[in-house]
Image (cartoon, rainbow, N blue to C red):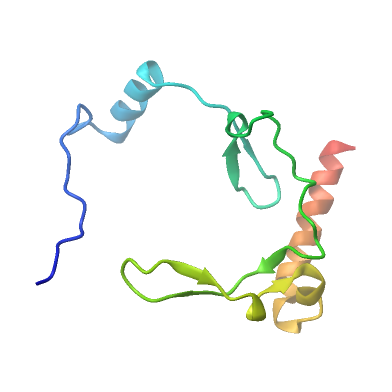
Length: 118
């Protein structure tokens, strides 16, 4: 017997509202959170998520951090698992010609960020 794993639609006070109406209502009634976004990749996270309330971009060990990650999934509900043997750190990616566009784009964006900060 197959189980229906789809989420059931829940009726809410936002039902039938346009995107703009919903946005205005949420802004006027919702709870506010301050996020910081990485100027390199756009990934964002809440400032208050961490015990200290401080988010750092400098805590990544570039000698160990896989910038190119292979993940394998087994289908519905199985999740995705990292395959370290076929994932690569930045130093390795730099030597891979098929990813030159990626390393050049990173360099360009880092230069732009430094230009704003200096």
